[in-house]
Length: 476
Image (cartoon, rainbow, N blue to C red; front, side, top):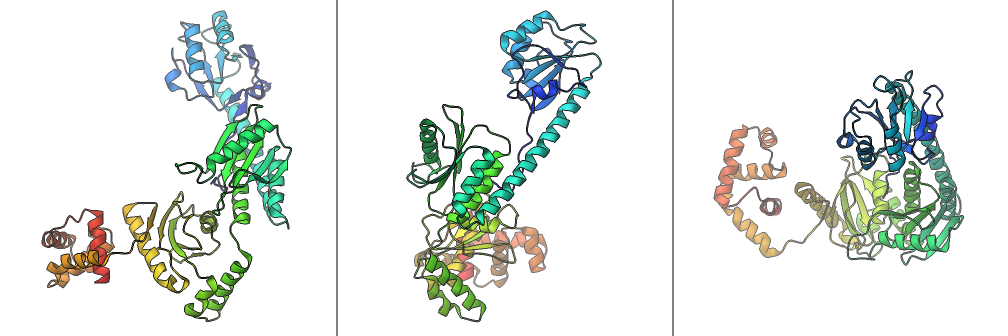
């Protein structure tokens, strides 16, 4: 899902705008005519005979031709590197632009600008940065206005069509909400050609869950035969909905604007079953007024329910809500320690989420939610220790628990070893933190853990062995 809080990238500068700066006095002398489509992303000065290794693409390359021995090869390499244009200073090496260089730029399709003697290369660079700053300010203002418009649309009585209409207006294109089967549910804006609509439907299939054996992408983009820029975004909420956008142009802030629409539409279309939702919030009210979990749990419904504990996010105030929306549930709680808990009515849609570490319980009835909550917390600890994005709780077989306790038998007569091992495992194998917690020297911790490994005949560097012993120490 796009990050709606991310600022749009700095827009490039049109080469035509740079030529229009009378203070610079630049003049195009060869190559294709500079238009708004010719974009400059940065300025680079080089007097290398072959600047190719130092170019990233999109540069206005400035040079005085100090090592211009083979103009054709030079221009070919600059074009191969993806430079936007070449600015040639006619002083101090040359009095005029070499004819061979102009011919090479015409031949290879590279705009060639003459930089007059009175204009320094640093002045050209300053002008590019100034134009970029102005363009970025305009783009930020446009994005901010679009965000405000989308938020206002989401508050209307018919929010989904209103958000689509606002998005189509801001992007000057067409916005459509596809169902899981690709059928359009709502659309707004000027509908494009049938070929473009068909291409957008196929693109929506790329991000629709379950359409292929591979995990679906969160977004996809393409260009239609008529030149329209197409984008498709999977909505959160577990309903398989996809937002499709067709626009005549692709501006730097469009992805940010679309990201805001994706979040709003995900919230607006998430699974909220009227009566069920009322019962759930009624349960929360009863708990606040002193009701017991045993009394209020039945109001949540028969289940099964899955409890998810999560750590991570982007640090914004809406991160927890966005996670709940992505998982398909409005029942979200954030603890004082930053752990987010989500109560899912269905477990099928549960999947790893970018930027989050998740621990999930096994499905449980409402009356068993306290145990499921503990299982989710344990799964989150396991996910954190193993650096996995998602861990589901697994019921431990009785024989596995019995075996783990049997293996702990050699430590039964030594409480010091048992306490040290338990503390060391709880602190993820940190020698210093264990020593501080127990009030002993870190070398004593090392000696005791080495002794435990020998008595247990276990490899304590093995994550599975650690988890097995930790479970036995917790449950034993």
